[in-house]
Length: 59
Image (cartoon, rainbow, N blue to C red; front, top):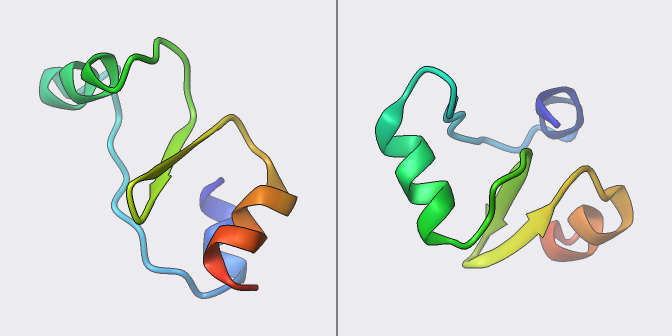
């Protein structure tokens, strides 16, 4: 995910749920227990889904 976003020059905030209890809490509040979860303008993308990411990012 990080490589994909970096290659497309998309700024992002990385949150490591294994190291950051607040990030884990945020993930659980979204209703997910797996990673990666990428939230783009309020829309969650579960897993690595390049076509969906490109559509949401306008790439």
